[in-house]
Length: 204
Image (cartoon, rainbow, N blue to C red; front, side, top):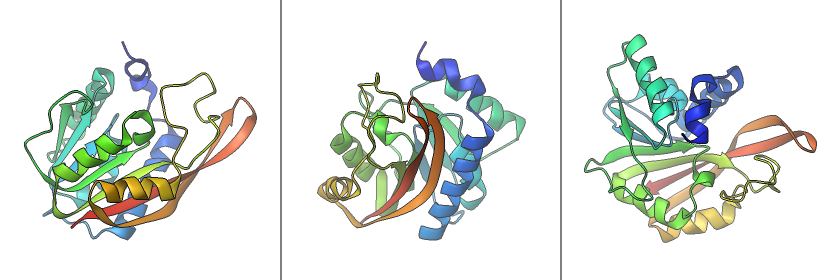
């Protein structure tokens, strides 16, 4: 059982729900969403971000590699009678890309867990329809305090200019950044605030 499987049942805390609401608002401010648009969320967890965006979009595929997270997500979809969200167990580091293509691809606090940033951005580019948008919400570059200094298998946030260059290398255009949220968290060094950016990019 993975760490995320173990945390799934207690994942939906008020602070995580607030973060998802704020990031959803930031996405809406950058992209004109509509029910005619299909969407793909990668690293969806329990679906917090997609639940905030579901009334603005058409069909949404929610992908994650954690069975525990997906089990909670499925229960939430059933209990709320949501008809435009489809969970999928998927790890793009080893599984083939879905056959479908999408108008919007988005992730929240997922990219820093993926070792090969270049590969995943190229995969997101492939999954998008022409004119589609990628939205990535994640941590600005930090010193490792966010997860603790014993974590070595993840990125310690991202430098915005370097991430923009990688996105452009993957084929994206019109790459923009805004600060979507500021997360205050108790870490080893005490209370610390971590900015979360929203990167929006277009497939030309």
